[in-house]
Image (cartoon, rainbow, N blue to C red; front, side, top):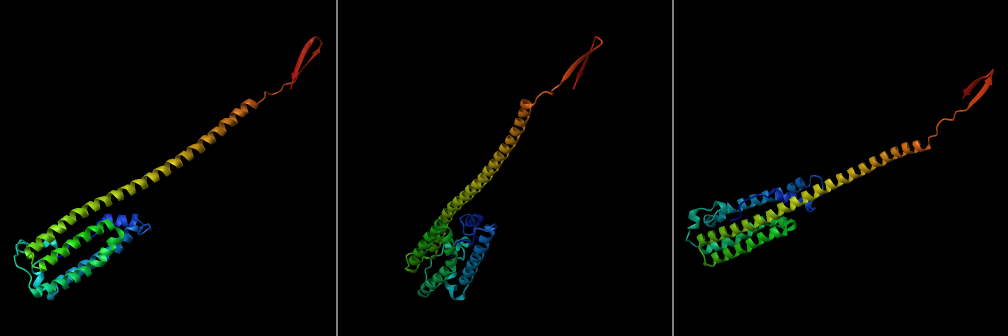
Length: 232
């Protein structure tokens, strides 16, 4: 049995891009191209393993995915046979091999999220051991795994909320940087306009102070008792 086959949410791709796992312009898309094949391979591997005929005697007691669990499986009071106990070990090893690349990717990018999965794995191992040792029956085992994954889902949700908050903060900081750059440019433009206006004003002021009235030379002459004035 495994967790419900939920793909990585979009927060993962945004965070992968922001945290520098991919730094090109289409970082989120590149991150998604990296993660999606790993996730899909995990789903295919789990499905193929669970449906292997050799495991039929044990897989009839529990579903492939926890959200597929039935009332009959929860009410199952039978216990594994010796043959079943040997198969459980092989089944569990193969399932862990299916999960390994997926968990490795999560561990590298998001250690806190990976810690949720590690905790689940340890609790699941304990449940398998108790089942094989006869301390619990199949129904009790199913109930325990259902509770383990429900608790893990709640903790995973908290981690995703933190991712959303981190993405929102990064976006806000980026917007602030753009706004600050625009404001700085506006200030520079205003200063240049003010300087140009001051230069024009100074030019007119200087023209007014330095301007001199035109010089006029006049001469007066007298002829036959009449005065004649000539200016130039």
